[in-house]
Length: 193
Image 1 (spheres, rainbow, N blue to C red):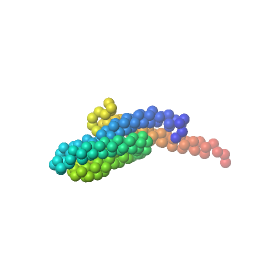
Image 2: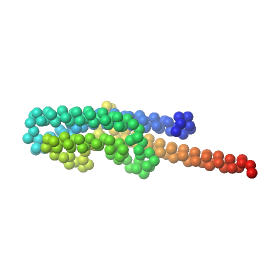
Image 3: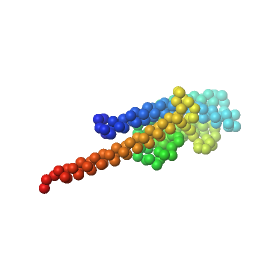
Image 4: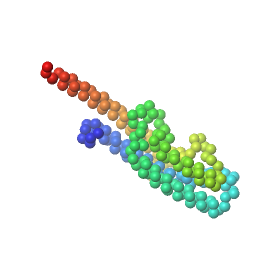
């Protein structure tokens, strides 16, 4: 779509809102994911009888590996979620947009974010910590404020803006199709035998 078309002028404000919301969501996720491996391994360590068998040096090494994993993984998430494609994957799928209450229901985004679970499991298993038995297991969207950002509220704004974008796009497509149909009818009427 060209930057000067009526379509882009109508959709531009909603695109800006979506870009701002997804940038804030990315910031919150990156911040949370940086500390997630250490938090999760600490939770398992405290709850596991098997943790008593670990030496202090092993615990120190585990914490160091968890911090490194969090930093490395969150950097990759920053890059992956800075692109619009994962965030725009639901456009055109109105029925799926209606039911979304968390990022877990946004497959293209959640696939990127939840990839950390396998690495955390590998790290836990390497020292004999138990698997994650929560339901659902693995990383969960944070419910607390992160850098003054509240991810559940941002998800609500994101879904609202996606719905609005989809509605406006649909209306524009109908208007464009009708204008083209009228134009063809006028051409037909104006043509000479």
